[in-house]
Length: 222
Picture 1 (cartoon, one colour):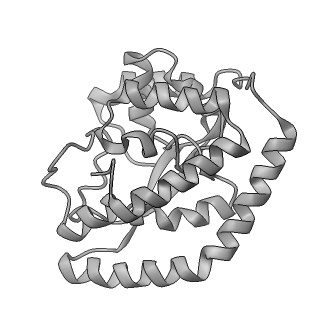
Picture 2 (spheres, one colour):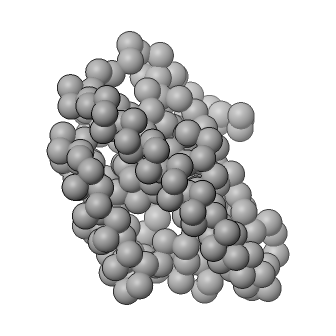
Picture 3 (cartoon, helix red, strand yellow):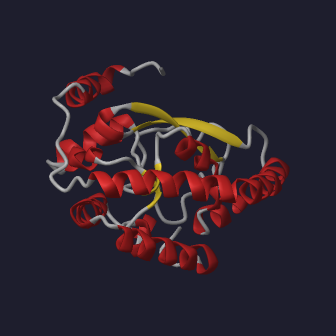
C-alpha cells in the first residue's frame, strides 16, 4: 500500500472507519437476478476474451510508441462492502500521472496522452478489467469503483455516497452511458443510486446497448 501523506491522515482514517462499518444491506437484493448476472458476466467475459486480448495488444503497442512506461497499470479501488482490489487499466496518461489518487479528471486534462484521449473516449482503456470480472471483483455492469481517498472525500461532501458499495462495481454503468466523465460526483451518485434501486436484467441490457453506442460514437465520454 502506498505511503500516506501527513495532510491525508485524517481523511484516510475516516476511510478506514467507513470500510470497517457493518456491511451495508441491499434492500433491493434479488438472489435469482444476482446468480444470473454472475453467470452472464462469466459467459460474456469468456466469449469476448480472445477479441479483447487482440485489442489490448494493438493499443498497448500504440501506447508504448507514444510515451515511455508500462502500458497497463494497477490502481487500488474500493469494491463491494468496502473491500480493496486492484483495478486493471490501459494507461491513458503520461507516466506517473495515473498514480495521483486525489485529482478528478477534467476536460482537456494535460495529463492525458493523444492515444489516451481516444481510448478514454471509446472506453477501450477499461477493457483489461475483464480480468477483474473473471476474478469476481467486478461485474460488467455496475457503479464505477472509486479510489479509497476519493471515496472518503465524496462521502464527506455527499453523505450517503458509500451506499454505492452495496453492489459490485462495474466496467460500465448507468452513469457512464448518461454523461460519463462530464458528470459531477453528485450527478454520478444519483444515477448510481437509480441503478441500485432499479437493477434488473432489462436495465442491464439497456446499459449494454447504450455502452455499445458510446464505444462507437464516443458520446458522453472524455
